Length: 324
Image (cartoon, rainbow, N blue to C red):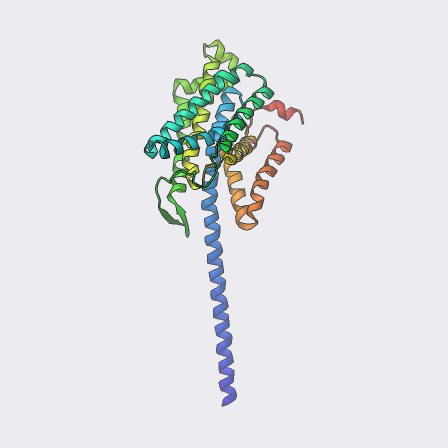
C-alpha cells in the first residue's frame, strides 16, 4: 500500500517535471520569437536612419561629382543651429528646425561657390578642401565647449507603441515615415520638375547638358546646397534619439561613405539597398553577437565590395571594374 503510494507520487513528480519543461520550452520559443521580431523592427529603423544619413552625400556626388567630406560637419552644424535657435533665442522648435535646415543649405552653397568651384575636377583637392572645412567646423564647436549631454534636441512626440511584442518610440516611427516620404519626394522631384531633370541631365552626361544650355556650375551649387539641406533634415529627426556631439560628425561621414561605397556612388537605389544590408547586419550583430562588432561589419562590407565590385552594387563607373 505504502509502495503504491510512493510510486504514484513519483509518477506525479515526473509528470510535473515534463509539463514544467514543456512550458519552459514554449516560453523560450516565445521569447526568442519576440526578440527576433524586435530585432527586425529596429533593423528597419536603423536602415532608414542610414539611408537618411547617406542620401544627401550621394545626391551631391551623383550630380556635381564632388565627394563632400564636410557632410558630417554640416549634419552637426544644423543640429547645433537648431539647439541655439531653440534655447538661446527661444524660437519654437519647428521654426528652429526649418531655419537651421535653410542655414545649412546656404552654408553648402557658399562652400561650393567660394571654395569648391576653384578646385572642381581635381578629386584630391576637393576631398582635402571639404575635409578641411568639415574638420574646422567640428573642432570649432569642440573648442567653444559645445560638448555634453545638455546639448540635445527634443523628440517630436513623446510616446511609445507595442509593435510585434517590442516597444518602439514614436520618434523612430516618424523617422521611418519621414524617410519614406523623403525618398518618394526626391524621386518625384528628379523626374517631374525642370530643376530635377537638369540634375539628372548633368549626372548622366555633363557635356551634352552643357550643349543644351544647362549651367553646370549653377546646378552643382544647388546640388551641394540640396545635399547639405538633406543632411540637416536627417539631423533634425535623428539627433533627438541621442545628444549633439562634434565626434558624431565623423561617424555620420563614415556611415554615409559606407552606404554609398557599397550601394554605388551616384545610385539612389543602391544607397537604399545598401542601407538595408548594413542596417540589418548591424542590428543582428548587435543582438546576437556584440555591439562592439557593429562598426566592423560595415567596414568589412566595404572591403568585400571594393575587392569584388569596386564601383559598388549598383555603381555605373565601369572603368573601375576593368582594372581588376
